[in-house]
Length: 309
Image (cartoon, rainbow, N blue to C red):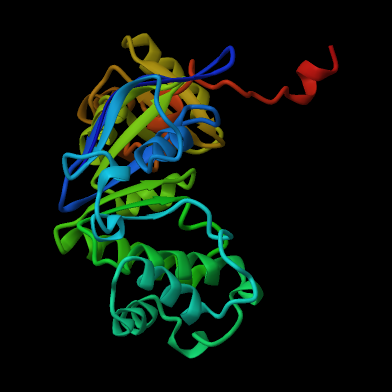
């Protein structure tokens, strides 16, 4: 439902998009991640027709968003939860949007209930917390019952209950057959929610793959070994002697690459090195993301030791 092809965009001397290309398939949540300056926000603005690309196309249901009749019925979006008239009630805010699309007032009450805002519908939206404004933004995105949604940092400002609700809500939207694109820096939330991920860096796509496939590749046959502090050096030594690459992750824990778990057990046992636990390493989305974007970070902080030089 959302197809981005070869987008290029410059702002003066800065290249914001450099051939950005991906598609958001129906029936799943697609995470859209990348370092600051990777081009995520510009891409979403181009999809909505708020910025014009220098080259390439961004299509919703096969057409540019600005050419769609009743666009909220094709793509619902949330880019800025604060983009509302603060003195207007939540219900009136949604009624105004519904009227612009020729939608009935009953649809406003339906999305307010789905977003959990029915009890505060007549409260001024300007008095809402950030988490409540996020819910209101989701309700607005759902007004036209669109087959595709695009949300920028929807977890921001959410309390624990709100995060659980958002996670469940996004999965439900995808299960209904919608194409859902979610941009977020919260890797843990995306790992629990998305089935697919598009990783961007320096204006282009670095990876476009399923979450499970990405984590399997990132694990790369690594083994996690837990042993006592007195044995950790001995364990590292004998394993390295068998050709393994060993990294100490924290006290009593080693990450072993180059030997399967069964061989690690055999080597340690034959050398009389005690251990508490051996398991195949499970990579996280954050770990995979950091590895893939290592060379694509535009804004990097200087550590204390570096700054003292």
